[in-house]
Image 1 (cartoon, rainbow, N blue to C red):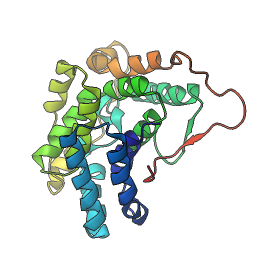
Image 2: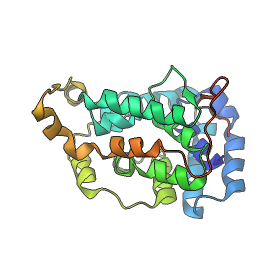
Image 3: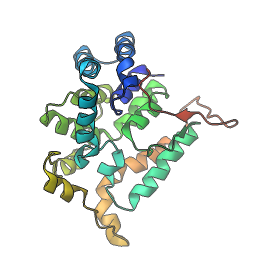
Image 4: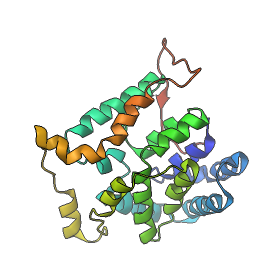
Length: 248
């Protein structure tokens, strides 16, 4: 169990009284594991302190404006990878199968590509497998970090920490594509409406041409379904349920 990933997962969930009550545990988990470099541990701890002391309704409003209202900051990974294309459905299936192959079943309350859920799952893997897994959408995480940094958001620290943990070589072409996408502020209603406008769903050969550069993550997820050496997935009895929670 990688508790640091559980902490980062919890910090990206909707702020609640439960999360505020757990902030002491989150600090202790980061300090005990010593997985993050000191500079990143300090900035993540600053976010924890912010959530512990800020008015809860202010924290909730900020979260909604950032992650629910602003499409360019969506915490659903495939929103940035596939948009509304038909490939998104298959990628969801692949990700669910990845969870199930490891003996877990995600809750029905969240889509499988919800980043806190994805990190919660990664936290259950051995360190090498976990870091390789979260490094796969590294270009998406970096784009989100840059967008949050432009807003001077303390949530930027979580994405910077994930980048520091994985230290993967980013897909620069995919990252450049994400950087070129609109990134409106949540109070720019006209731009937000345009960003959330339903995209054209393409069928036939043109669909593949439109999404070839963004298929890498789904392909890697298919590869990742292979059990890690020495890992025997649970075959009998009820599957554990992955729940993203504030408890580290």
